[in-house]
Length: 285
Image 1 (spheres, one colour):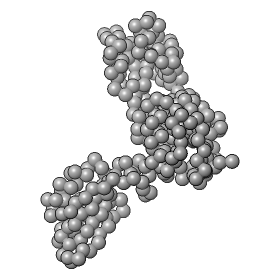
Image 2 (tube, helix red, strand yellow):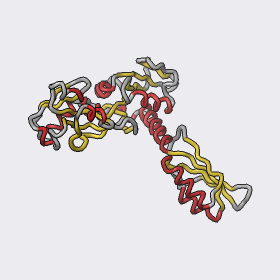
Image 3 (cartoon, one colour):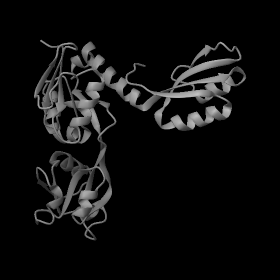
């Protein structure tokens, strides 16, 4: 009996990024692209590749311990599962759209037919907003529903909205929800605090940190060391080492990757030299 059973999306925009993150976290190294079940004996984990919309259901029923899915799919499923960690990839928004000049506010949707692949999510939202509309459930190609005459508006998860605009539809109002890839676990399950679960979540967190930070190494004159350390404070504190020339020190620190070039410019202006930036492949904080 393996200590941890994890659901992974087998298709869609979540599939490849999820697989890549798991590989970076030390899992799935011997997995084939078309495998449905992968046993990872080194880490004592079993992975099940499932439809993204089914992940939260299996986890909520307690069949599997953890799963990677989208926040939108978790909420739509109404499963007994909860979000544990947001993974920072596959961002999207659940939005309403209608033909141009037919609806400009959500109140204009009263009495209309709204097509969606997320009937549970939309039904809950309409009830919360006291909007009386008919939900037309479709499995895909929601943007064509108006042109085909089965709906007056649509509600769909979109990344940019380009597909909706190409279908002659305009976005209405603000997103119903903002979604991204998440890890889910069973609601109020004692196994949520199991060491295997904590190790899995810690590894994924390490990948996210590694993707967000870089290591900066540089040499700095000692009379400007404190100023340089203020530019690169690191996580706890920068590492400072003496050089053979006793008037200089070597400094190493983690900095956000988006700030790397700005930090390098500031350090150079302070007199730092030999400034190097290195990617981080894994970390624990």
